[in-house]
Image 1: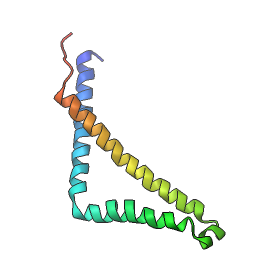
Image 2 (image 1 turned 90 degrees about the horizontal axis):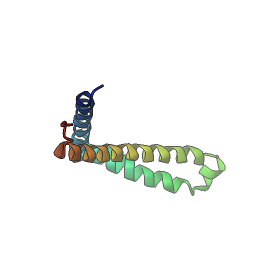
Image 3 (image 1 turned 180 degrees about the vertical axis):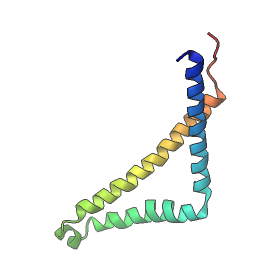
Image 4 (image 1 turned 30 degrees about the vertical axis):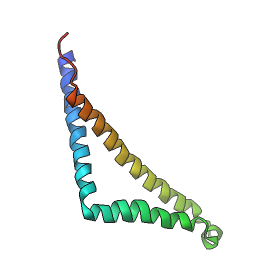
Length: 103
C-alpha cells in the first residue's frame, strides 16, 4: 500500500467515525432515547440495582453477582458511547487538520 492508499483508508475511517458520532448526537437529542436509555437505563436502573446490593434478601439468595454483572453491562455500554464520542472528536480534528499527501 502506498502513502496515498493509506491516507485514503484513513480518510474513509475518519468519515465513518464522524458519521457514528453524528448519529449518537442525534440519538442523544431524541427525547425518547433520553427517557428510555440515558435516564431509564443508565441512571435509574443503575440506582435501583445499586440499592439492591445492600438488600439482605438479595445477599441471602446469592444474587449480588447477577446485579454486579448488570452494572458492568451498563458501564460497558456507557464506555462504548464514550468511545464513539472520543473517536468522533479525534476524527473531526483530523478532518479539520488533514495530513499533507506531499512527500
